[in-house]
Length: 585
Ligand code: AMP
Image (cartoon, rainbow, N blue to C red):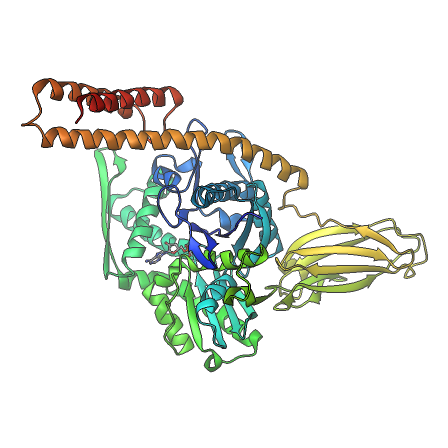
C-alpha cells in the first residue's frame, strides 16, 4: 500500500503531512511553503489556478476567484464560471488535487489514500461533501476525522501521560471545542461543540466594514460596490489583523483604491489593537457557550481540565488567548504549531489505517475514540424531532427502530432524517428523506420494518432497512439536495482528471517563466558586476540576449501565459544559456 497522507482542508489554508519513520512530517508544496491557501481561481482563459498563485491574482480577477469554499460545503451553493456551475465539492477537489500532487512530488511515489480532517462540528452533509471532494480529486478517503481530535493525537504522541484536555480550535471559518481524555494509549473524545460559521474570516469582515465606513465618510465613495477594491480591502484587512496580534497599531495603505471625478483616491487608515478588540469582542464571546456546553456534556468542571490546547490560526489573536485564559482559569498551551498540528494528527491516523506504523511504537498503540457532534432524529407527528442517537455518542454507533404503516394496505412509508439539537425538526438540518417501499399489503400497524441508522467512524450517517415479516433487506439512499449523486461525482472525477493534466502542463509553463526570470536577473547582475573586466563584444551579446528574454517575459504574467508565449520565452532563455556556455563565463 502506498503512503497515506493526512490532509487538513482548511477554510483559509490547507496543510498536508505524511508519516516518515513514525514521525508526522509536513509536506512542502511546489511553491516551497508548508501551507497552501485554500483559494481557487479561473484565469480569463479558463485555466484553473490553486493556492498561492490563485491568491496572488485575486485582486485583478476578483469575480473568478473563490475563497473560503469550506464554508459552503454541504449546501446548494454553486459558483458559475463560463456557464458551468461548480459545486463546493468540485472546488474543494481542486485544492485537494494540488495537495495530492505536491505530496506525490515530495514522497516520490503515487499517492492514492488519504485521511481528511473536518471541523468536529460538521454535520453529515458537510462530511459527506468532504468525502466526495476527496473522491473527485482521485483520492481514496480512508477516514474523515475531526480537526481537534487530530490535534490531540499529534499532542498525545509527545505527551502520553493520562490527562484531560480541552482543544479550542478557532480557524479561518469554523470554531470547534472538544474535551478529550488522553489515557494509556487511548485518545477518547468525551464531548464536542462549536460553531460552523465563526472564524478568522469574520474578524477580517469587521475590519473591512470599518474601512468601508471610514472611506465613505472621508471620501464619499462606497467601496463595497467594487469587487476589485473589496478584494484588496480583504487582503489588507487580514494582513492588518495579523499585525495586530503582535503590534498595537496597523496601517492600511491602499493607493488608487478608487477613482473619483477629480482623480484617483488613496486609502491610508490606521487601526489600533484596542479598536480591533472593540470591533470583534462579540465574535470572541460567541466561543464561550460552546466551551461550556462541551464541558457540561463531558460531565467535567473547568478545574478538572489539565490542559487547554490552542489550535487554528485565529488563536494567535491576543484577545482570544485572553478570553480562554479567563474562561478556563489557566494559561493555554501553545506547544503545537496551530497551522500544522491537525494535518500531522491526520497523518498519524493515516499511517495507522494504512498499517504503516512500526509495531510497538507509541503511535501504533494509540486507539482513537471519537463522538458524533449532533443528535440524529426522525420526524414524528407534529414535526417533532424524535431522537435516535444522542450527540456526543461514541462512534461508530447504531440504532434500530421498528416502523409500521398508519393506513390499511399501505405499501410505503416516508421517513425524514434530521440532525441537530432542537425539539422541532424545522429548526434542525434535514439530512434527507427516504421512502420505504415494497411493503406487503396488510392492515394498518401489521408490517414490521426495522430501520437501522448507523453513524460510521467518519461521522457519516448510513441507513438500512429490513422487513421483519419477509426478512427482505431494503436498500435505502438518503436523498439530500445538497449532496452530489453518484453519477455527478463520477463525472466530476473524470473532469478533474482531464483538467489536472492541463493544470500540470500549465504549472510547467509557470515554473519555466520563473526560471527564465531568475536567469535574466542573475545575468543582468553579473553584467553590472563585470562591466569593467568583460570585453565590449561579450557585453553587447549578453545585453542583446537579455533584452530579447526580457521582452518575451514582459509579454506575459505568471497568471497569463499561453503556449506560444512560453515557446518564445523558452527559446530566448536557451539562446542566453548557450551564449553563456559559449563565452565560458
Ligand atoms: P487556519 O484555518 O487554522 O489556517 O486559520 C486561518 C485563520 O487564522 C485565518 O483567518 C488567518 O487570518 C488567521 N490567522 C493566521 N495567523 C494569524 C495571526 N498572527 N493573528 C490573527 N489571525 C491569524
